[in-house]
Structure formats: C-alpha cells, structure tokens
Amino acid sequence: MSEPAAPASDAEILSSIGLTLGDGMVEAAAAQIARRIHGGRIRVVGFVPGDDQVAIPPLIIQLGLALCNLTGGTVAVVDANVRYPGLGMLAHGQATDTKESVFTTRWLRGSLALLSPPKVERAGEVVPQLARVLLEGADLFAHVLVDLTGFELLGEHASAAACMDAVALVGRAHHTREQELIQLADLMPHGRFLGVILVG
Image 1 (cartoon, helix red, strand yellow):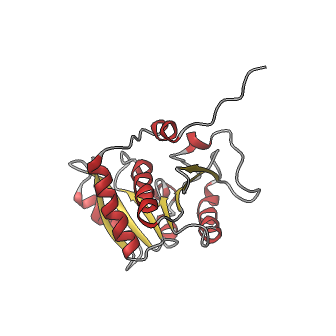
Image 2: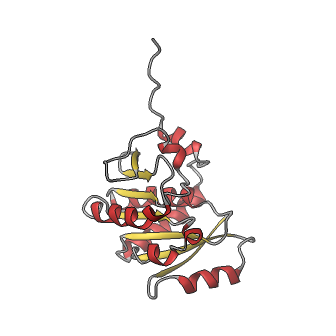
C-alpha cells in the first residue's frame, strides 16, 4: 500500500498558480496598497480585470499576505467566480467546506485563507454564494479580497460589485487601454471605486 501524498507546502501552492515570493519591489507595492485598504477601514474589496489577460489571483494573494503582516489578522482571498475559477487547481478533488457552500478553504502561512470552488457550478450560484461567504466570514476575516474575474461574462458585474465595500480595477501596464478602464469604472457602484492597479 502506498503512502498518502504529503500536503503541499506554501511554496508549492504558490508555485502552482505562478506566484513566487521574495520580489522586494512587488512586496513593497503590495504593502502600500494594504496600508491604504486597512487605513481606509475597507473590509471587502473586489478586483475586476481590465482585460481577459489580467491574472487577479497572484495579485490578491500578495495583497492578502501583506494585510496579514500589517494587521496580524486573518485575511481571505476568494476566487468568487464559480463558473470560471482561477484557483480551481488548488481545490480540485476537495470537498466543499459545508453542504451549502461551493467553496473549499486552503490555509496559507497560517492566517491567509484561499477560498475556491473545487468544481464549476451553475451561473446562478455566483452572487448568492459570494454573499454567503461574506456574511459567514464577517466575524472571522479582518479583510476579504475577492477575484471578480468573469462576472462580466455572466452579466453580474454590478450585482457582485454591490456586495463589496470597494472595487479596484486591475490592468496590465502598457497593454490595457485607458478607455477600457474608464468604461469599466463607470459600471462600478458609485462611491465605492478604489482606483486602478497596474501589474506587469
């Protein structure tokens, strides 16, 4: 009989989504954004990609780690789109947290929770499941960072963004067009637009 596989290390988990830590410039930028989020008492932040080539999970995991370091609190990174999961490989084959949930939780470095769906769900589940996570995590998580990739494909950008305390757009430096970002910003809930983050 073979031995069960050892649980993946934090480095292996991060590597599986193309993220390596230790870049001082990236960590300094993440720390600056984390200070703005925490200083503004913003608990739930949604991140919307400026185009279909923007990868949100590596960014919000870096921000989540920065918030953990800054606050000493527990932070959640939520792969909210149950139709097109970006972190699905981390949850593949895992059981969901509860019978009612479509998410499974994987802990990283002790206080960063990665919530992702282990399998694709029906489109109508997206916003109700996101609302459930935010409600149930109200006492557990100091901050919740939500990947809103794919919501525009489902026509649910506005309803998902309405669940957030603030929303940030993420673009690729030298690639994402300013006009695309302006059009997306106009769709965000009034008074909750945090700004634009450029990556790459």
